[in-house]
Amino acid sequence: MTLTINPSDYAQLLVKYQPKVIATEAENDRAIELAQELEHKADRSLEEDAILELLVTLIEKFEDENYPIPEGTPHSMLLHLMEAGGIKQENLVGVIGSRGVVSEVVNGKRSISKAQAKALADFFSVDVGLFI
Image 1 (cartoon, rainbow, N blue to C red):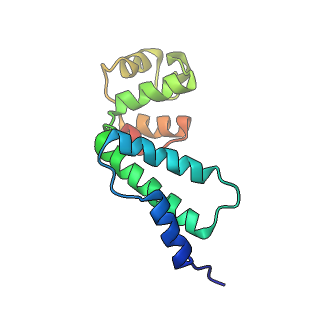
Image 2: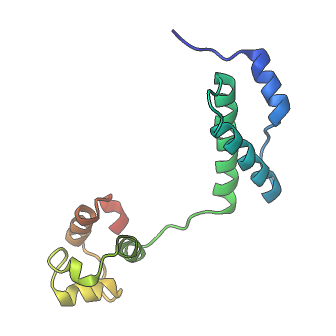
């Protein structure tokens, strides 16, 4: 059984929410407010789900264009994961090498080898591509 959207109900929601391509911070804030309103509504209809999906797509497009996340370097990824997980250099001894090797890698004096990238990916349970 395929559920279909009622065109009349959907049209009424379009009039109420008036979704459009987001061009300003104020428009983005309003779209977020509307999306949150729909997201927290109990027993959303199919039409409301469709409007919510549309709003989220518009918000993501605006934020991707205006707040791009820069690509991280393998070294910056390592530092971020260490900080996020409360990992100290000594926790990586034996994972990627001796105390001296770990210190050089963490301090950016030595690049991360492919073998170390694999070991770090396993240790942090992330994709190896973060460290290559």
